[in-house]
Image (cartoon, rainbow, N blue to C red):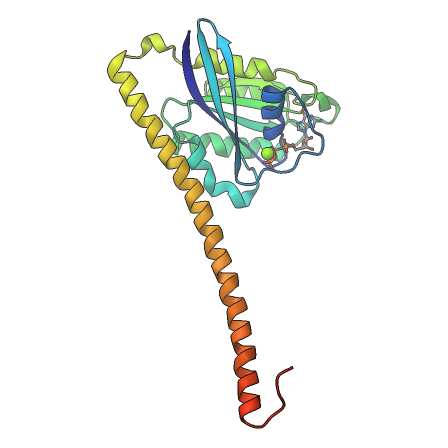
Length: 237
Ligand SMILES: Nc1nc2c(ncn2[C@@H]2O[C@H](COP(=O)(O)OP(=O)(O)OP(=O)(O)O)[C@@H](O)[C@H]2O)c(=O)[nH]1
Ligand SMILES: [Mg+2]
């Protein structure tokens, strides 16, 4: 059975439930005290779809504003993007529309877009009407589902729909297509390692800054001590 790797990223405001959706899909569990994602996290899950195995390589991005600039690294090369909003928070639906615009301008041209209105278990405090969201999704030819990571509603269905929308391998040319895919994959791996390296470099620079400050502090203490003792003042304590 053919195995296909499908890179999928999750985008959307902080707190809408992106990580919870991924946890429900991959681990079939839910944590009401889950922490906000820092940077991004990566998980995989393989499922059978018709006569193929689909290995989802899932990049779960951080919704906090300070991580926004990292998003292009995750949607670049993605076969699909799941943009999540919280049905109980109108403003998260506006953020979703901004993500759609950004994907249209800078995302891969054939990316499959899926819209997930999460927390549908909280229907009594709903702020976004389902039909409005569905109409919007239809107008941009996106998949649309309301989900609940908490109650496991429509989570598997969301990924099955993505599998269904992604063009089948029959459409791919056999050998040249495969080598192009291999080159793109190598590029992706190098690119991902480069991200890790640059994060590491930023941390190292930060650490160097601290070391420099400690050094300057100690140096000043020693210098003042030396000055005081050689000029006849009190010895440094
Ligand atoms: N009631 C309900 N709560 C949910 C659901 N999904 C997530 N939550 C809760 O919403 C909060 C935020 O969930 P996360 O999965 O961390 O949200 P996120 O989008 O990954 O947030 P960032 O990582 O900051 O971008 C947590 O308290 C979750 O338990 C859901 O379907 N229903
Ligand atoms: Mg998260």
